[in-house]
Structures are given as structure tokens and as C-alpha cells.
Length: 80
Ligand SMILES: [Zn+2]
Image 1 (cartoon, protein in one colour):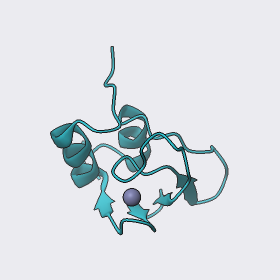
Image 2: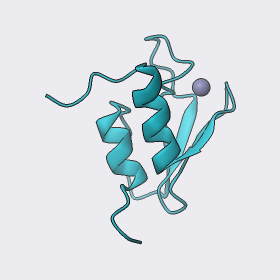
Image 3: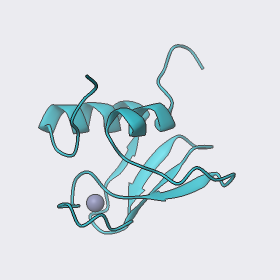
Image 4: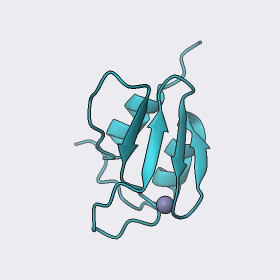
């Protein structure tokens, strides 16, 4: 690991809330297909550093998640 953002850090930056449990895999909402309904259709695996949505099938790592969320400007209010 170098200076890469962790998937958890990216999720926080992208306003994707996860339940902080001891599990490696955390359910969360999807910033791409969620439209404010807040359904936990996606999961983040922090051991593997991967995001996957069961509804729209989006599968991303920390870097691609970050660039996709910030690139399209959906589901993220940024950091003040
Ligand atoms: Zn989705």
C-alpha cells in the first residue's frame, strides 16, 4: 500500500454511510442508483477494498469509486 485512499475513506468522502461493524463487508447505499431512498443495495468490502452494488451491478475499487462519484457529481456533497 502506498498513498492510496482506503475504500472506507473514499466512502466517507462520497457521503456513503456504512455501519461501522467488525465485519469486512459492510452494507451501504449506492451513490449511482440510489435516489434518496436510502436502501442498502450495495456493499463495501474493506478487506478487498471493493465497492459493489447488487442493484445496478456497479463494481469499483477506491480509486474508480472516487473518480466516478466526483466525476458525475452524484450522491456527494463534498467536504466543506
Ligand atoms: Zn447501484
